[in-house]
Image 1: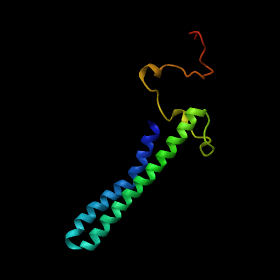
Image 2: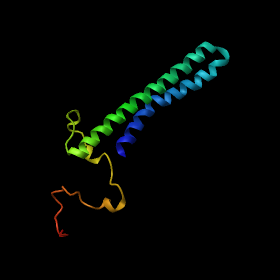
Image 3: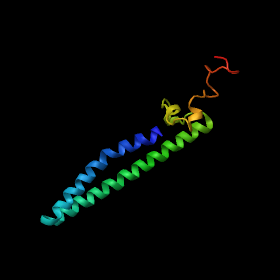
Image 4: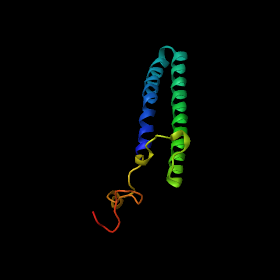
Length: 111
């Protein structure tokens, strides 16, 4: 699922710094506990906010893909998006099969 992998890649951007903040906060707990706790709280909030945003984006994308799969047309806000290639074929036997609506595919097995 290409689309979901793309969202996961976007999620890494704030998650990596959040883990750095966790390491810094844990280190500061000995010398400056208030500052260490502040770093830890900020990191947890950053991770939670990232999870919330990615979850919502995933739901929006999944809904748009569902509408595209059922109706064959894109939702208004997704005009111009390339949803045809968002997912690969289901299994290997479908990988070489031309789509039913492909104008280049000729019926009757002729090439």
